[in-house]
Length: 219
Image (tube, rainbow, N blue to C red; front, side):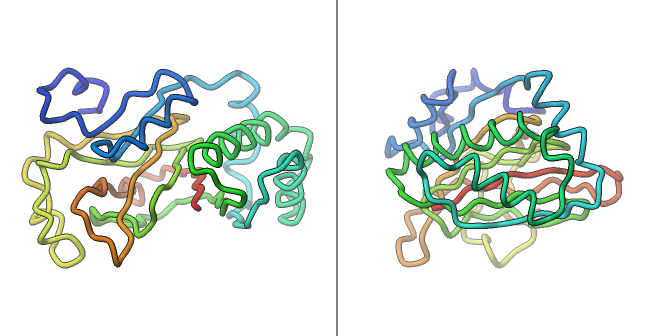
């Protein structure tokens, strides 16, 4: 079951925000919201950019990006440093990453962000958890997206300690982002445990042969 089919549940599920546009992802700033999601379909150019190298030898990069007029050039430099060629085939992906960096930085009022782009073929973060960040943007350009669940579907006392079967009350209420969807997740800083961070995990893919391309932006 995906989150699309659950948007009409009762009002007790209103801690997530269905963002109709990228700019309305700023709904994550509302105190009662801990995940904001913008569903989107990729342009032909973006899909071609992703498909051109997702199965290549590229494994990923991470870097701090200064949010200025040169964001696109900074991203291109990261790809070049990993010997990803021809770079012109990635123009649509670079433009999309630039757009998401600008949008996330505006929501966070950040001058610098940390950008991670990596391919994933193994099971990572298999346990449901909360992030130790204030806010984090996630977008799976290829492969299945992040899984998340509702606040009242979680036994929070087992987070970080128990198995998923102890953490999750009802597996029919696990939701999953689609490829190219953009989500901003609210976490909990270690010294500020509020019990409001969204509980999520990476999808299990190792036995399926799937390969993910995941963008993560942190402040």
